[in-house]
Image 1 (cartoon, helix red, strand yellow):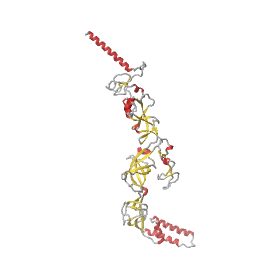
Image 2: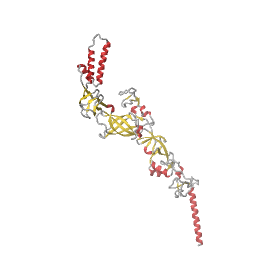
Image 3: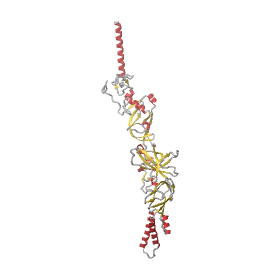
Image 4: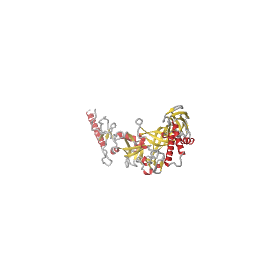
Length: 480
């Protein structure tokens, strides 16, 4: 029995010495030539923020610590390294940061509306009684000059009598009459003609009265424009006062397209841009127009801005209240201007975008001075630098922050660095980069979430945790 106890003690001492040697070797790795490398770091698989210089228990969960790979211990706080085999399994792809022009596409919805500049109200210019309405219902198509209303008005008689008397006085001029008297009679006749014109008589009607010398107590009102009668607010036999509206006629050869643009899309919207749109009634047909107005006020309920597009409608296919889907395609430059080579050196009317000329001048429609295309935010491709862009899949966006993972050049093993950058607007499949990257750097476009997850496991700065986890000081802050 005594000999057995001696044997047990010797075995215990042997294993104790072996374990001590194993711990010593694991804490200090040696190179083959005897040189000592960086001491091994131990961490907890459940709490990676724990870093210890030797094995032991986690102060939080009391799990056994595990060794950290030497390559991971040597990279920076925001970097992570992988073996080539691990990188292949992660299927990581990289793309260079480029400076190039890309196309942004803005999708919007809206509806067709009347062109307000092509709507005319047919009113009574003199008080009287409507004896006849030649257009009996709304929706009737009329041409310019078509007769619409036959109105009885005694007030016309006195005005016509003045014209007839003035014309007779001019004809009865004596040869020896003074020039002053002659000019007075002529001015009186012109004033009588203008009075009748203001009462609604046409030039032909006035000439007929002068020739026949016979006044009439009826007035025919003609259509000032061609279009569709969209309102009828009187009927035959009604007595009307001056200014009473009888019809409303709308010219539908040109229409407005009213669209809603979201706040996010406003950097790409410019006055004078071309817009393509489709309607449900004619699938496959693409119509086009020009942005003529951008509402300066944002709608607080919809968070959108109203746009107005001028569109031609020669065939009458576009009808008010039709639902439309529209798209604007733009090429932004680095400074945010929109590249449109066709506007190089052009002058545009600020009220009518269809008026574009090669030199300064006045608008043919409203007479306003033309402005340069550059003042409206347009530029030529030759005069602008392309923006710095990255694929949209490269950026991990969380609220106001954007993180990308950049491949570290000239690293011994595949190493990636997390970098917080400032993004500009999104243009299609790309983000414009304002700062944080340089042209030619390689950014991760596939597998960046896996890299970010690996950094989170190691308690390093990541997408969701920009500062990383702090190492606790001993057992501070933890309860048994």
